[in-house]
Image 1 (spheres, rainbow, N blue to C red):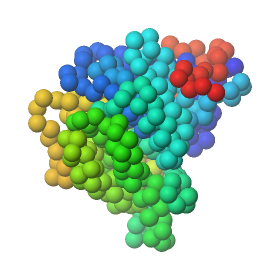
Image 2 (image 1 turned 45 degrees about the vertical axis):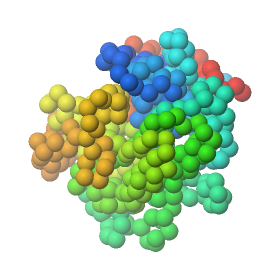
Image 3 (image 1 turned 45 degrees about the horizontal axis):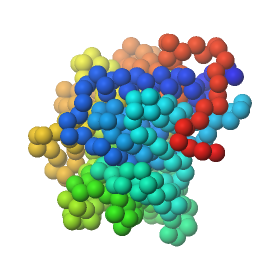
Image 4 (image 1 turned 90 degrees about the vertical axis):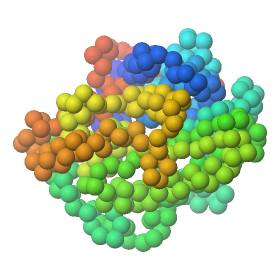
Length: 399
């Protein structure tokens, strides 16, 4: 079938198998161009492995240090006349290229919040790898059915205590407007968001993996977070999502205690603002990212997800140098984004930004391109007017 992008708001309803394969290929080539990561991980479990930082982590581990990887994700497979999700195609392309490189790669498709998928992952580790030396936790989901209570929790994206009004952008139309978001009405909304996006499930995974004796001596585990500039604080860091991120970060000392007898360690890595399926949904953030891209590209310090993860692995998690942490014990690979010269320039542009000057003072074109790249579109060497085979399988997943 011929597959073209069909967009509804911040979601692309279609994805392209050849385009997503090209996206994966470009990320692999970048990691290979940086050379091997000395003392990198060798047996890796990535929870949330099909898109964004999770996919980039899997690529970095495999092609940066020849790691065997198991990826867990929840994606819609392809069927005749119905393209699969971008994450499904990403995972198929990754596995195929890993196999061609002689690397072990298997995947599990299902609800990572569930006990069933945890058991499947443990069984696969026991059967094929024995133990893992790195666990990456990179889940991004709007809802979670709690495996112990059966309660379905849905996250909300709202400020706390007072309404928030600021600029935002329709990045497809290039229209800048003001948006007002009302605060949460009850504590339950906050608790639900923490239940979905906080640290409890990460803890459940590590507890289950340890109890099953599938964590290696010296194991590391890392989860991902974001802080950002003050202008996004009301909707992000000081909002409902921020409460969830606080909970995620508060899980680190709990996991460190749990892993102490293995000489294991857990970290939260605070990453840069980038175009992802999740960030596209947050009001204000797309405009901020468009301005940030403009400034960072002009300074020659822009990074995408794969550049971020390669640097995290090579210069932080597996560097021979002492690992620098901030005052709260977090790894910061948002250090370039948060540089004072970068933030001051973004703040000036923010004050100026309107519909008329958006194309000139921002990199809204780069934002759009990155958005469509997520779904396999806008790659110059892919013919989107040609028929493509939409029925692509992930080699290790049997129907």
